[in-house]
Image (cartoon, rainbow, N blue to C red; front, side, top):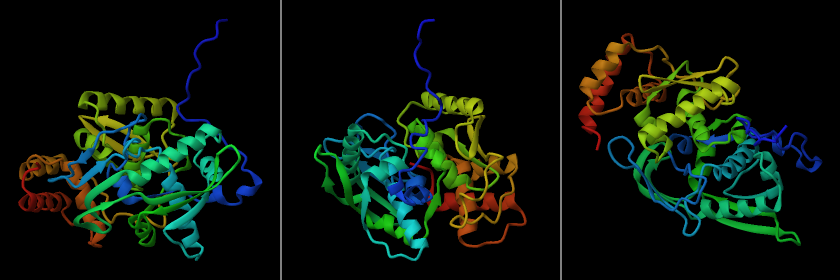
Length: 356
């Protein structure tokens, strides 16, 4: 029988099933991601060198501008694995009562294994380029740690040094200085737990979709987002038609192979609907993510009226803002959810007007 082309599986293979003895508890640190990076499209979805500056419009006005690193392009979503690994180690140390700082020394081999990467010579070269992108990708934003503040410039990491190299030039230890905003995210518990299967997702859009589901759906019964708004939140530069096709392809693959961690996705009438999978538990969410105080569904009439009082806005995006506002301020569940939501949308429109 002729040998055909090897069929790729939905998930990357588990490359390191048995940890090396010298890894100790490195692989046991629960993967963590900061909420700001999960909320906003800070990372490129391109697997090729992305030299295009990126502007994220947000809701009402631009709130994010990302400038690529000269020669290497924007930090991409696979580069984010490095930050997830380091943040996970720092969170584990903080939980154990150990002091943490911005400067962290990591073993490159441990990092590659923990993030399910190859440990060949090429992998170390790829890691070095990723560090360059993380250091020199420039982010200008008015996103503040606890809301919105003045316009400022931040970086993922501010310094990276190779402490040791073996005879072949392969890095052994790396010392990294994190951006201060990432350390503040740890200190304020502004973090979320990620599934270990995240590192096995092949496609950048799959990873971004999962991040948004973890951030916005969490352990709620459902999260809904219009595809136009979803494309903005993903940071996708595809055409709307192509973006919808890509999302549908992910959904179809998950229906067949059950490869997406924790959440199930569907599209209805141009709306992405996200629900936790039956096997999902609060192990990933607790204790850093508190359950929202109100999770009842709204009526179709409420969405229709919201579109009337806040023309031009994505009402599902406004719904998420409303639910997060209820949770943040510790408010009680409203007696009339539909009326409360419409009132929120009306006030929001009075303050912000039409989206730019």
